[in-house]
Length: 489
Image 1 (cartoon, rainbow, N blue to C red):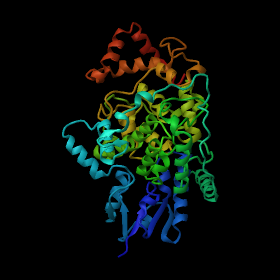
Image 2: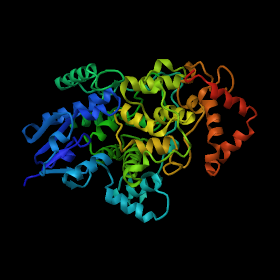
Image 3: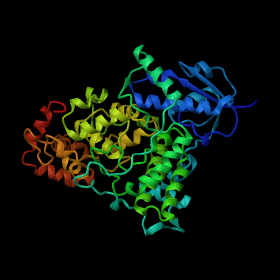
Image 4: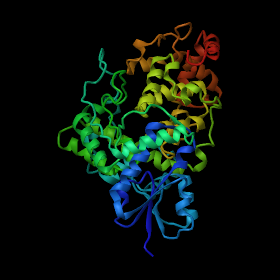
């Protein structure tokens, strides 16, 4: 019997097509699970419908309420192992033929072998990244890293240019919407009006690729106009520049439109050809072949219970309305207002806004890590069930107690003041921790340490911050102030 390949929303590129018959299902039930950012819903539907149009007569395309309407009782299906625990359970229950997963630089078998070789040792990103470089030859000269060192992070932490509102780079090459996008927009409007789905965020022009052609154009545009500045300003933020020098490729990669090995090979070639500095190229390769692959493999290695089974810091506060509704106007702290506002507008923010502004705020205030994980998954165009747990439960919220990151990513206003231009336009003072103009990040940092001290006391990387907390003369007053702070004011 000829097998029909059922492809999912993370498998929409040529990498997942071996030339046979295909099945593509647009199931509206996926959009009903929780509130979802409108830009994300639009992106997923547009990508599915564009792929169906590309495949033409070779695809069975169904627009239905649930997957089971199409798949129940079928014995002719094969799948490339999908990208969530739930999807993998479903395809196995159907008895579909399972092919190995694709779309990452390192295969699941290669990661399993590397992890097994570690024995009882920690599965450190740096070690995984170096192993990947050695195994693939990425940025290598024989057995040695190009340039003589593995890591150029010290070159990639420059603050934004002073007195600048942007990096002054050309706007990214935006995709052009078409009739398919118009149909998606009309459907979303109708479904929301009928109360069938709940959308959050603005309905703006589509900014992310939904076809392989668009994704290749986005990669070429990044390489040509922003790669050189990506490294130095990787952690910097400017109020007037929402993209900075970032690639905007995470969403099309997570849709399966770009092979990440092709992406990193393309970027590495820019250094080899003398067109981009090694610090930028290495930093980007680290993000894709290192961190992106790492969190994918940890999703499977740590097990399905990882997302809900950890709360090492006892964080139980429900997500506030301002987050759930992306109500940036109700937030006074300029950095958080701008980050949530940008998320509302675009469905995207770069990693420092995610980690050191939004995540840092949530960490300091003890937001429930499972709720926060699901919010990140639903509100970001590149949010997927596999990408967020290690990022949010592990790195951002330290809810796993140190499995992914060795210490919490908590910081006061000084970090934000150094790496952004947010503080200059804010009514709070990043240097003040007590009083009416006390920065909620600076004061919140000490209040967080006070709350989390019992859980963090045995962490040697937190010894110095906790010693500083014990020396704080106004510790009780700061903690009481933050306990009484009126939400975002």
